Length: 72
View 1 (cartoon, rainbow, N blue to C red):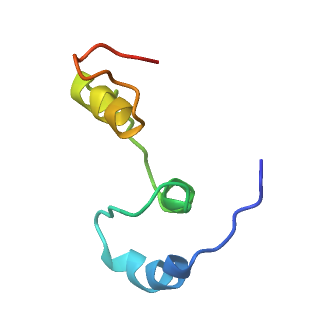
View 2 (tube, one colour; view 1 turned 90 degrees about the vertical axis):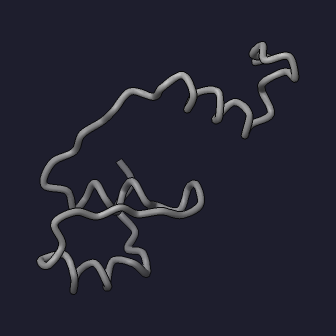
């Protein structure tokens, strides 16, 4: 596993975490949101993707035809 690389957000989270009951980190893909959150989490709940989320992901990647059929 690759060593964790501290992000700008880590300093702020270090100061605030003891005061937070929950945390949601939003931002662009591939910037370390999941790694940052998982290092700090007391517990992790994973939810299966819904059909709508899967279609939205495919639309975002350009993998759904205009007729609604999956292309890739």
